[in-house]
Image 1 (tube, rainbow, N blue to C red):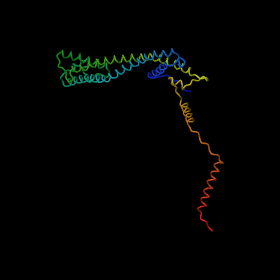
Image 2 (spheres, rainbow, N blue to C red):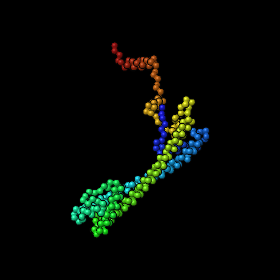
Image 3 (cartoon, rainbow, N blue to C red):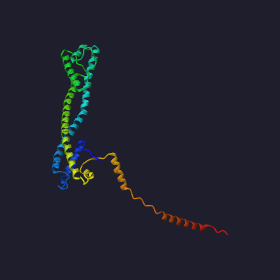
Image 4 (tube, rainbow, N blue to C red):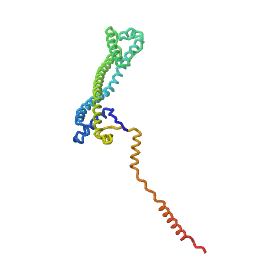
Length: 275
């Protein structure tokens, strides 16, 4: 026996509600559900559709902005990393003393680069480098070039602005997702009530629902494999042409005898007479 499957996606929910709204042109006698449920569907559908559209727009904006944002993150990471490497090269060549690393909150006797994996790492170390270079220059130090702190600052500030913007987009998108999530149970409950009334409307004398008719009004029935095979077999039997009946054996025997006599008479005509 087939079972019903409620919509499991937002688009399927919208299609089910659209099917219900499409029934508003029917008369009271033809309508397979109450006007109350029909009006609820007409009220809920535009609200649900609007929430889904808003969420899709914000999510699409977030995805589009994220492509550009990832490149900005990559650039900021590279400039911070390269600045520290140039600093270490200057120390290795003897141009700067190892203790200058302390201006940037780096260990004085360690050349290893700090972790720049997360966005928070980039934010923290970008600020430390900019502030550290400023303090070192105020003490009379020579500027570091290739990259200069000015280039580091430009890329860092671009990253910081994009980071804030991207976080806002994510927050808006998450808020929209929660609003859609909160409305799904209402839509599911309404669709369940609608399907219940439609099945009751098309219930036959044997207590079973005419699923073919109920399916035309949006109810989705899932048939098990065995039931599908049985339906296909039944359709094949109905479409199969009637088998032609065999001729009676007596009639066949008479036809064969007649054919043999005809061949015998022909052969006698072509056989030469021998005396």
